[in-house]
Each structure stands twice: as structure tokens, then as C-alpha cells.
Amino acid sequence: MNARTNHLEDRRVQRTRSHLHAALMSMIRESPYEAITVSDILARANVGRSTFYMHFRNKDELLASAMREFLDSARGVGCGPQTRAGGLTGFSLPLLEHIERHRQRTTTNHQTERWASVHDRLGTLVADMVAREVRKNAKGEPKRRGALAADLVGSHVASTFIVVLKWWLSSRDELPAGEVNQLFQSLIPPAYA
Figure 1 (cartoon, one colour):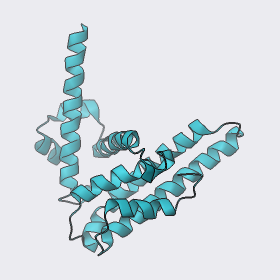
Figure 2 (figure 1 turned 180 degrees about the horizontal axis):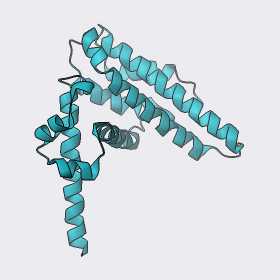
Figure 3 (figure 1 turned 120 degrees about the vertical axis):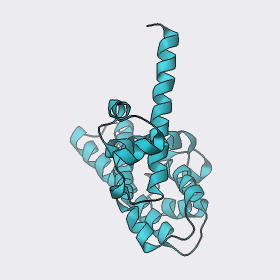
Figure 4 (figure 1 turned 60 degrees about the vertical axis):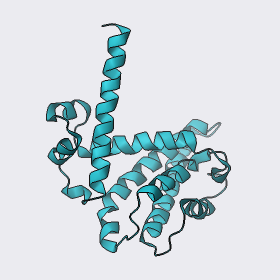
């Protein structure tokens, strides 16, 4: 297999994953996550079942992949002054801006509940991402204490972000993403941000 063939296969893989991510995210805006089936996703993405299972074991893995991809890209662009040069919370503004672009202006309690499992998964991914960053930046910390601190910081940042996100989505105030990000940042100790 030559480099050109590998490049074409890589592009096909990326396109397939992108179609699956987009299909799932559009369906989540319409239906509770728990009600969405792999068959529904395949129909929306126009992707075959065997192709899906070449990339993902189930819809949870697809959701995690879509969120991870977005968080990774958000960390790459989230390094403005609002996020204190990125830091551990550099993901927040780009993520809030993305949610703002896709937010339905008439959020009801039913809609907020519909997103609960998605928010739980997002919180887990954010906690893992932040903990990895803390571990990477830990210098001179005893290994056990550093790992515990990393997990604690990850959980704190993630749970605070999810609390702010849920509050914003259920709020009647239509605060812009930048203001919500400032509120979130104000709840995070400066050493973490």
C-alpha cells in the first residue's frame, strides 16, 4: 500500500467518523440520548452497520469520540485572555460558544433532563482531560499525591463546569457564552485556571 492509498483511506475514515458524529449530535437535539439507537444513527449518517462497528463498539463510544474530538479542538483554540492563556479551563469558552450556537432558546425542564446523560458523559471527559493536564504539568510532586490531586482537580473543574452549564441552559436569562464563561472562571481557583 502506498502513501497515496493510506491518505485516501485516512480521509475516508475521517469523513465516516465525521458523518457519524454529526448524525448523533443532530439526533440528540431532537430526542433523548437513551432513545437513540445505533440503527437510527446509521440511517441518519447513511453509514452501514459493519462500517460503524469498525470504528465504534456502541453509541456511547461514538458520543465519547465526538466529545473528545471537540474538546481537543477547543483546547487548541481556547487560549485567549478570557481563559487566562488557556490553562486547565481553556476548553470552556469554545465549548460554551458552540453550545450557544446550537442552543434552543426555549429550554424546558424536559429538555434539560433529556441532556442529563450527555452532560454526565461530558463531565467525565472534562475531568479526565483536566486530570491528564495536571499530571503532565506536575513537577516534583510525590506520585501518589500528584495522582490524587490531579483526579480531584479534574473532578472539581468538570463538576463546576457542568453545574454552570446546566444553570445556563435552564436559566431564563439569555446570557452570552462569554459572560457564562466568566462566571465559570470566577468559580475556579486561579491556580487551576
